[in-house]
Image 1 (tube, one colour):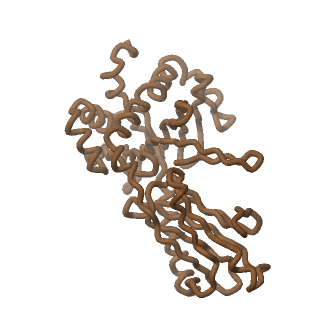
Image 2 (cartoon, helix red, strand yellow; image 1 turned 90 degrees about the vertical axis):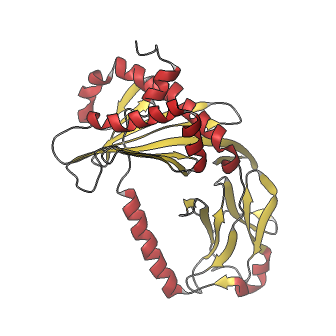
Image 3 (tube, helix red, strand yellow; image 1 turned 45 degrees about the horizontal axis):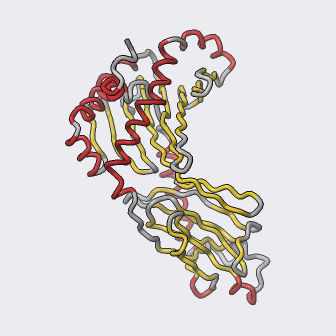
Length: 325
C-alpha cells in the first residue's frame, strides 16, 4: 500500500505494509463459526482459521513453505486458532468482533499497532497503544475499563509491539518474491449513458500500491473527478476506477484529457489512456445488472467483520517466553 500526501503541489510517497487479522467469535448463529479469523497482508489473504471446524490453512504457497520450514510457527498458529474457541463462550445470540494488526512504514521504520473491538456489529472498544489505554466507544462501557487493566494491557501491548510485528516480518521474508511482483492492468473507458461521467477502469493489477488520476494538458486535475477505492479481485489482483464529469467538456476538448494509471514503484511505466469517444465501452442495461450484483456481494462480504484475543500468543511465547511470567 502507498500513502500519498500533497503539500504545496509536491507529492511524497511512503511504502506501507499492513498485516491485519479479522476475527469473529459467534454465539448461537448456525452459519457463523464460534471462532474464526483471516490474516491479510497488504490486501492478500495469508492464513485462515476456523476453530469450530478445526481448520488452520495457509492461503499462499509461500505461507505453506513458512509453516513447513518453521514447524514451531505452524504449531503456534494452530494452537492459537483451536484453543481460542474456549475463550468465546457466552450466552445468547451475539457476535464479538475484532480487527488487530500492525502497519509498518518502510521509509521511516515506524511500526503502528491497532486494535478495534465490536459487539453485534457495533464498536465497543479501541486500544490506544501510545497511551496503553482502552477507549470505550459507548458511555455505558466506561465502568468496564477497570476490568480491562493490568495483565490485559500488558498482554495487548506485547501482541502489538512484538508478536504481530514478528509475524509481519516472517510473512514479508517468505512472501517477498510474490509480494514484489508487478502485474500491469488492462484499462478501459466505461460510460453508463451518454450523460454519465466517463469511468477509467483498471483491473488485474498487482500489487495494490497504485494510483489513478485524470489530467488535462499534462497536468493532474481534481475538479469534476471522482476517485474510487482499490478493490480486490477473486484471483488476488486488484481493480480501481476514477470518474470524470464530461458534461461541460466540449467535443474539441476531449483530446486534452488523459487517464493515468501509475504504480508507486514504476512511475516511468505509466499507462496513459486518452479520452476518446470511440474507445468508450457502454451498455447501461448490462452495467446496471453488474452493479446490483456487485452491491449484493459487498453487502454479503461486510456481514462478517472480526474478533481476536489469542492470535500470536504462542508465537510470542516462543519469541519472548518470559514476558508473561
